[in-house]
Image 1 (cartoon, rainbow, N blue to C red):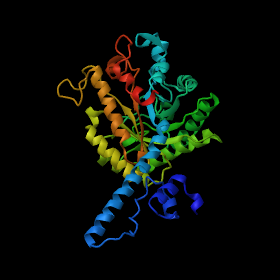
Image 2: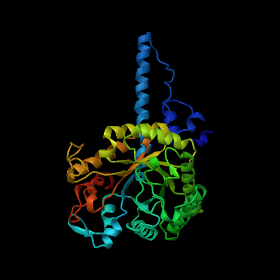
Image 3: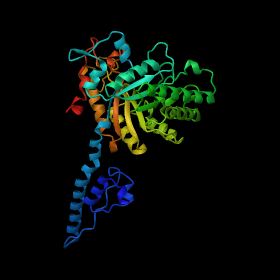
Image 4: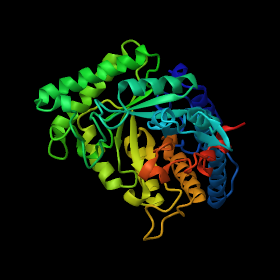
Length: 400
């Protein structure tokens, strides 16, 4: 049985005088409860001195164990997602938009790579008419990102347009289908599109089954809270489609994404109910926009809750703040809506994610750095295409 233990478990056990056993091999050392202090063999003359000696020994054990508890987190730094949803990037560049970093025009993907970004998130619409994010567009952008070494999160909206808590429109091609037909359509569509990414040499590393699905998806069939059974069937069909489209290749991680980053009560309700259906997913995704969702303390409280309650990896998969006045014109915001305030916001959200218990805060994504038009104040570039200070947030973490 001792052979099943990692070297770290053996080391921790040896340092505190505890034998390696099946019990302390079933969990990693940062999940295990610290062992009880060993019996002391000290020459003491009074009960008071014995108690003092035990206190000293306990402090010594903690001094040894605490670095061991956190050491694995440092070794997994490369797994931390420094990400951005860049779904608009290709459209902007194809339309002649130039992006500049320190005054030098560069391809947008290169600018983000130069500043430590290692993940790209791309949304996929079924048959969009007004937006570019169809299969061919998304495959092409994913291929470009792959060439630069990005990992890739694919965001299925299962709609021809935006899907979010306030709307989850059926694709026009699926209108009028029965529940059973919709389940089959989700499976086939997911399988075919995942296969297309593989054939193009740009398979996703992670897949979202739906976008901000706190109120369900594919309304009215999968609308919550009234149709949980239907919703669960649709999610399972999407996951099965991912598996079928992946074939013998490594399976991408599965994310379930809601928009309640700073709302512990709604998060608990949703995931307690979802988990009752035994859905096979790997990552909890959350959106966090402070003007809609709450304070940084609320976000921190919910990150701690999710980590301890569900023991799954957690990613803040959408976050943003404005670099010029937009959301806080009539009331004070947590940070100034200025270029420096935007950077401060990202620094603090990153701090909250990195402080999530047990190393389960696995990264965050900005939505959306290359956005233009009315939402351009949430982007990473000013009106002239010049990179703002926020783009440098991760330099100190990723450069060496």
